[in-house]
Amino acid sequence: MFTGIVQELGLECSVRPSALTIEMSHAHCERIEVGGSIAVNGVCSSARELSVDAIVADLSRGTSTRTPLGKLRPGHQVNLELPRTPSGGLDEHWVLGHVDALGKAQALNQEGSEWVLIVESPTQYCRFVAEKGSLMVEGISLTPYDLDGGNLRSAIIPETYETTVLRDPRRGNSVNLEFDSLAKYVERMIRFVHSN
Image (cartoon, rainbow, N blue to C red; front, side):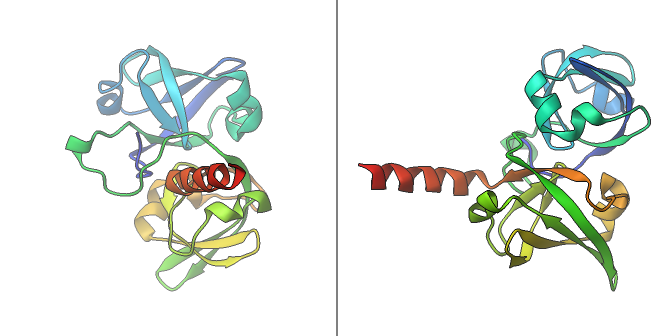
């Protein structure tokens, strides 16, 4: 599992039809095993090959077509997070690394000492977003507020702004969204109860 706390910015080296090659720190490479998981912009990926300072991660056809990962080009930075265990501490939200939908980055505005990200979410997923709940955007755990139809705002603290890909959210760019797992389970149970 993941928590949405980005540990490092990796550098995209190459994209093949079935794999991504990402440069990352030697310290993090040492913690990954072949077959192990890593979240790349919020997408849970499996390490296929390892070197001293890079990994080759599997890129399935579904991931390539349903997320922006297949459109990355060499030189793009990506948010990276290694999986967490309960013994290591869970600082933020409980995240699976399974992208639910693509949103659109509408704006990133500076307000005082912090930044505010405005994201447009597909309207059919708005039922999973709660004021001051949890939402993953590009693998970053955010707290949405000021919900307005499909648009939502999230405050970005200076640390997140400085250490993630949010420094360069081009307007209209697609972003990976993962909605709260508990909300999805609750909705599933309610539907099941009402259908019986």
